[in-house]
Length: 252
Ligand SMILES: [Zn+2]
Ligand SMILES: [Zn+2]
Image 1 (spheres, rainbow, N blue to C red):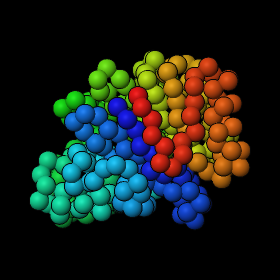
Image 2 (cartoon, rainbow, N blue to C red):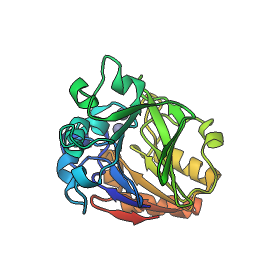
Image 3 (cartoon, helix red, strand yellow):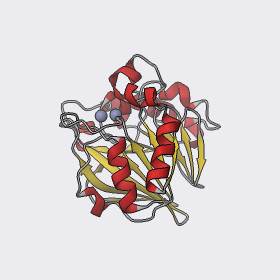
């Protein structure tokens, strides 16, 4: 597997004042190219990678409906399906992102794709890739799911925005190859449903993946310098942690 990071912005200020790019990340296997959380600008930043949506993209995954994760989902699907001509493109999203009053996929675009609703404990088979919904997270009254991608004997977990709960420690498989954290904050904030670096440390000490990536930076993390934060996490947990950068590629 190979990961391509389009953007690293998290939180309102960094995303919507465009201090960092957004756009989520791509996950490439032999037979699949997934675009996970195509936030604002994803369509443009996609072309920084070696791929073309209408040739390469096989599926889009939304962890949740918030705009910093979904703003370009319609544009990406229009491009990937060649406005409905290219069949078989898949879309995975929570129920509220597809059917609720805040649904983010336009009805005419949805007809171009095979749409699947994410639910806790669900597994989807995509040829050489398995997508598993690990658990539902608490995040400002929208449905958010942590996800695991398995291919060629490797496992990558994505923990998007949400409030950390101790129960996660039992639900995250031990010793996976990589965990990507949307660790927006450095310190825990009691009233905001976001992941912090303190949470990341607690998780890594317990579930011991081979490597970790932090991304979705708030101003607080940028002021602390993401690379320094990653170094601190590595030292404290023993898990090699990388600070995501725009256009970064990681081989799994
Ligand atoms: Zn969110
Ligand atoms: Zn977010």
